[in-house]
Image 1 (cartoon, rainbow, N blue to C red):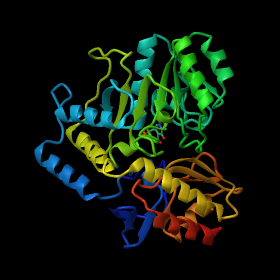
Image 2 (image 1 turned 180 degrees about the horizontal axis):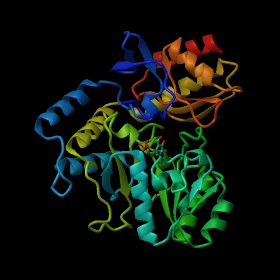
Image 3 (image 1 turned 90 degrees about the vertical axis):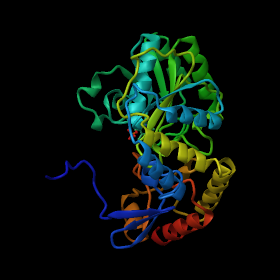
Length: 374
Ligand SMILES: Cc1ncc(COP(=O)(O)O)c(C=O)c1O
């Protein structure tokens, strides 16, 4: 049987991961400035992560969500230690898109409304409602196009109020730092009006932290830089360092009811162990300062390459914009320089999403290669 081909593939076969490196089947070593799409937070094959998972495999891997799983409570407690706002509740699932489906469903239940406001260049996943609120018509089927969604320009509070006035909006979904879209960011003034307008017109706010969460931008969640108290926060990628896990944090305004949400695999024993291990490892590093320092260093090094037009993004969620398309440059970075980077819907932009454990010497390696190729 052949694979259903939905990805254009690079000709590399990774067989091993080691910290910030990937090793292929020919024993070639690649610097990972992509993190498997912002997933690798604590680095590949972290010994504590592996040991904790091994120990858990020997105990129990999975059991039904109809039976108590204390690891879920431990994970909720641990996330609270990292998250600045108190009293949110945790629901666990398996991926970013699933987190978004659950978030949207909750907001629609809560408000009894169904139109969603999303933003130009947004990406929220590939399942039913998540893809409907993603700003890319090429990947939507007619089924997905049934949802009532309005796309607005990012940071446009006037249009936001005009839409909210119509009274039918259940949720406004925001990525404070856009990922797939190309690293555009919200501004403080916009978030202040978003917070006020959502209250005035009784619409929920969903902060999509699937890519930007778990310290990717330096803050645990990217929205914590602003004065915003979302109704629901979605998270996934960096949460499990490659073990599939997603989740939502739910504002106490939204009350739980049996049957409101549910999942077979979400929050299983192994997934919780993976995420608990990620947080235990991350809390040993002074992440906030470290990530700001690395971002500053990255920006300084980028200034020395004249063909770079702009550096976008925050923390270790960065984009390098060139005045030309970067497809060939990314291909050469992988095949000639052995460095993985990410693309985005902006064809002129390279996305940088390394493990949060990179050091300045890795940034040096990256810029040496970039200089050689540009
Ligand atoms: C901001 C954002 N939301 C949601 C998703 C969907 O996550 P997943 O691929 O785990 O379903 C992604 C994936 O790239 C994302 O970047």
